[in-house]
Image 1: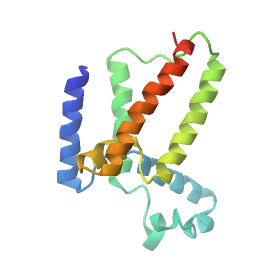
Image 2: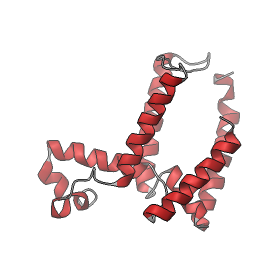
Image 3: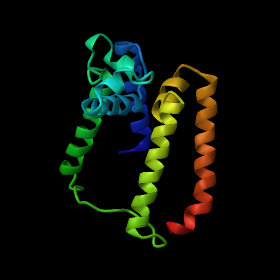
Image 4: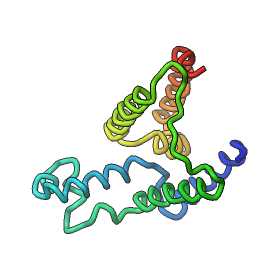
Length: 164
């Protein structure tokens, strides 16, 4: 898909999210709620008394009954259906010639853990900060966006030899 058309479509989805739900888009809240639910299966008393996760279970609430959880499920299923429709459903690991498959997977896992931790520490993921925050003209979100782009370009400069 043309990235400009996709960007415009995403803007309309974000607008609809604000209009219908009163909140912007984000993804880390769904993972936090899923984590709370899974940990509650193992240690319910601990999670219910947790200052971070406890409010998800207050008054007998189920943390999975939240619209961003359903957004995450729909995003996953939509991507899965798209892979089958377009014939891209093979299992592979994309990597450059300077790294092994195992090394690529280790770096991907470590990066995912760091990003997941940082997104909850920062009270939101890149989509929540970049899309919803920037749409509300939050100065912190704009600073975050510029930092992400600058950091991405700077990092790409130093690691490009591993991918080319």
